[in-house]
Length: 186
Image 1 (cartoon, rainbow, N blue to C red):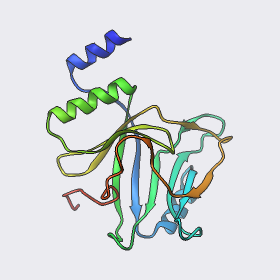
Image 2: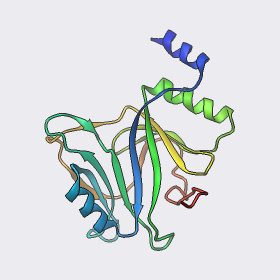
Image 3: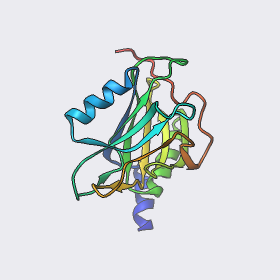
Image 4: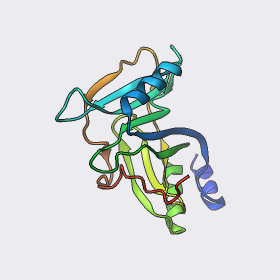
């Protein structure tokens, strides 16, 4: 096992083997949630609500409903746009799965040595349990590499809880993490 890890390191960066999920920030959050859950086979894994207003959902992790078959904890997350910060809709980040923690750290070192900007990581998310590592691509858009995420199926209950910390361990969440950092307007 280690021999393979060292061989990959000598040859280049960690290999992404799957597009894991993408995250959207929506100005009209409630309408968007209803549209996605009403028109696609997506159901919430977790719903998080505002700490001061329990009737206002602010973040939802959606997974593919495959019945008894397991799927990733989320293939999409949706966040309510903050009226104080930007109040616009945009894609927050895309996320790519790597095989394991070794490849996670190999990829981290590879990007760091080439001068790319680290955004947040390495750490472990609470919801979904992924080991995460966020970076900015050359346009300023956030990307995430992750490993070791949770799987869910129809027997996994949807949770609804107050929004709280996003990681079990790792660096402190950057204050501007929710902001749209991409330099391109398409």
